[in-house]
Length: 371
Image 1 (spheres, rainbow, N blue to C red):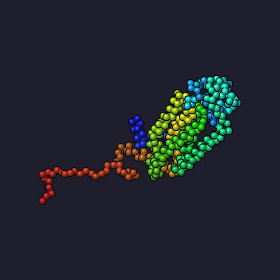
Image 2: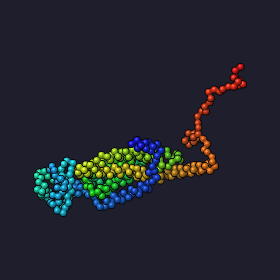
Image 3: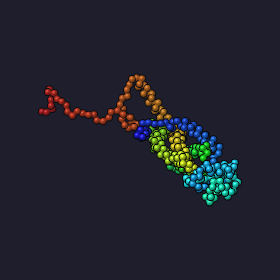
Image 4: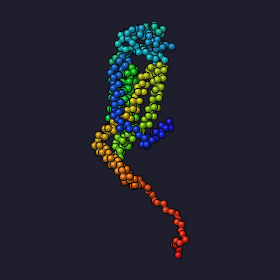
């Protein structure tokens, strides 16, 4: 851990640096590949919950009843129609039947009570119409659009429109990846999933704004010098916040991983998967996008400005001049004489008052100066 802390200090001081911005083509290619895989999964279709597509939900309360027993009984009743059977965190069994099944709820409850030896009063039936699910879907989509618009407006006012575009692209990137993974894994999309989506978008935005704020500080007055380009300043700011981003992501992923793998996997609380998978994938994607997508894209947009192009030319000209001067001195065998760096305002040679001897020894023949 001490080595990791030392690495963070060295990154902040600029002693060590990873060129994230300079390798943006690599990150763009990797992101495009991930998004393509997610899009293929999305093309296969999402597994919508009853809240979105309509259907019936039956909750059974019986100690000792297993998911396998409830699934077997449901398949015998429904025949060709498959039912989604899950255990909940309240110790009950939840059976979901799509709206395509024409079997009345009362008939299903009666047959289920007979096969599982459960009193009918211990089986709670809830029927959701497809029109209600459609309304919920529209509201969820509307909430997402409003969130995106407000985020764009805020970033455009607080920073600038280029940052807003880069952050918005990163948010869409994270959302596509998370939805694609949901489709590939086959998890059910419920209102809890939508809450998870909105949560990860907020987290991704927070991480991106932290990096952008550091980049903004590093880029103050950057056109007044000719030592580094805007991309290099942005990369320095990114490295300064790198360890913080990693630490924040790891700390956030630990409890989410416990919900997903222990609560949903080992304990069988299937309802925890609705939000935990969205959070787990989204948090990881958000940290990646803030480092490898948002900041490189912002630097690329910024480098298109005429003043930044002129700055890049001045930096290249100075470095070429310095390299030429160093090569000429190396060829002639000269060494660099101490001189003042007028641009920085600090001398590079030895400066300060010359030390004088406190006293001088006198010989016998030398006058003392007394008369």
